[in-house]
Every structure is written in structure tokens, then in C-alpha cells.
Image 1: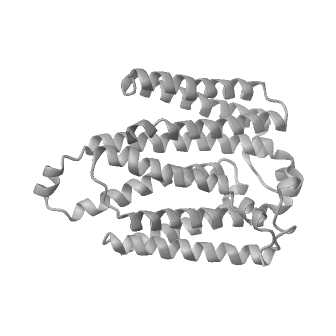
Image 2 (image 1 turned 180 degrees about the vertical axis):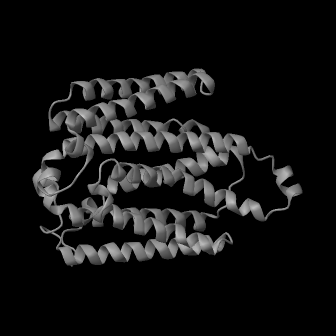
Image 3 (image 1 turned 120 degrees about the vertical axis):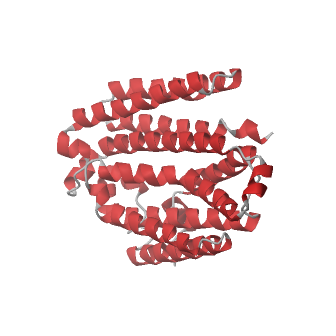
Length: 309
């Protein structure tokens, strides 16, 4: 019914979904677990992962559904909808995944005594729909929406681990010795890092895809203001990321491991991507920058791994 299974797996961006799962695992066990007892049960955590992954996969499908014409020009070899998977079946799978995601999100929300938080998943589903139909066609707005959604992944995990604590008596909380400040600092740091890197990467992809976007009536930043303006704005975001990371190293992450890992695994690739961005003059150059930024995001996750041991 849904064509070749491998095409379906490619359609839902399985690599990105694996990164989402890895992010939630690292945030739960290496970040939250380092500063407080975990509150979600394994079942609750698995439901939260399922909800996040299903809604994200549905978002990728609906985005490709509405972008198929532009994608035929920008990256014809990667187009799946309309080729091996027809549009009707793609829409069916979009709704099936959304329903599964919202049900799982609702179950875990009821499980922690916050049934109203089910609307978080319904809201994200709606935002992804409007992103595909409207926001992605507007300058900067679509980039910001995607960046916020990516940055929300670690915060959702933190939220669902912290909420059960609100039902505990104050004397019990005091005996648990929870380091709320550390959790807040680390989770906000990762959220900001994910937001800025995703924003930069989305802006780079807009420049890379300008030809197809322009042909099919999209109004992204490089189309509305020109490639040079879009490139300068992207360079500005890149500089903010580098400066913010340097500030974090000086003020917080000044141990030997952090300095070595972040300088070699994060700062140097960021500087390389910035140089490539400054020199870029073709779609292939911008594609290289996008790839390096994705690697940097993965290195950011790996940075927390030693906290597991």
C-alpha cells in the first residue's frame, strides 16, 4: 500500500528521527539523571519518545507533500511522494502517525497527572501543518518555527521529568537534594544551542534551494531580500553561535575534557562551516555547510555521554 518500505523510511527522515531518539535518551540519562532521580517510568518515557517521533515523522511527510513541486527542481532524486508513494497514501500515513503520537502523548500526560498537557502534542501537530502550508513560504518565520520545534525536544523531556515533582511535599523534595539550577542551566544551554544551529541550518538550506522555491512561489529570505542579505544574516547567526559557545566555555565549561572536546569537536567544525559559508557560491557549497552543521549538532549530543559513567 505504501510502496517500497525503504522509500517510506526515507520519507519520514529516519536519520533525523534517530537523532531525536538519541537526544531524548541523552537528556534523560546524562543530563536529568545526573542531577535528580528520574520520575518518568520506562513505559512513560517510551510513550513520550513514540509521541515525539510519530509527530515528527508526520511533519516530514506533510512537508514533502506540499513541497513536492519545488523538490522536483531542487532535489529530484530525493522526491518520493508522487513516485513510489502516491499522495493519498502519504496523507493517510500522515494522519495515522499524528493520531498515534497524540494518543501516546495523552497517555503519558494523564500518567503524570497533567491531562491538559495533551494539547502540547495537538498544538505541535497543528504548527507542523501550518508550517508546511504557510510558514515555510515566509521569510525567516518558517526557519524560526522549525528551530523552535527542534529546540523543544530536550525541553519536553525536562518538562515531563520535572512535573511529577510538583505533587511531592516540600520536605520530600528537600531530602531528594535535586540540583534544579544545574538542570535549568544545562537544559536551557542545550535548547539555545539547538535553536541557533537549526536556525542557521534552515537559512542555509533556503539559500541552497532558492531556484525551486522561487519557481513555485515561495518567499524565503534569499528570494525576498537576495542571496547576499540571506548569507550575511546566516553568517551573523553563525557568529552568535560561536561567541555564545566560547562564553559558555569561559564561564561554565572550563575543565580539560570540555575544552578539548568542544574546541576540537564543535568550535573547529563551526569555524570551518563559517569559512565555507563566507566563500560559498553554489548549491553544493551550501549543502556542505548544512552537512557540517548537522555533524556539529551530533557532537553536541556526544559531549554529554561521559556523564552516563
